[in-house]
Length: 98
Figure 1 (cartoon, one colour):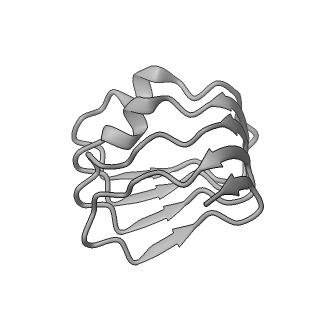
Figure 2 (cartoon, rainbow, N blue to C red):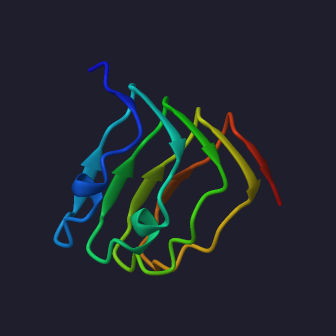
Figure 3 (cartoon, rainbow, N blue to C red):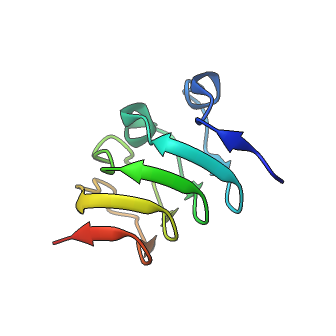
């Protein structure tokens, strides 16, 4: 795909969403905090985009098993991930601290 621009808010308002695979695109801007609160999300793949700013807390994502957030331009601290099922977390190639 070659999607670009901000992540469509309508897409992340889907409360039953379990999988969000938008890797290898040109999405940019800040990652909306609502992404971290997707209660039913299991797989989140947003790597290889152009997101900037801080990562939101993922405390509300209780079922998250994999989060691929690498190869963006996130900065700041590493947020809280509330899922006890998290098995894959990719944060490389960002400007994160902590």
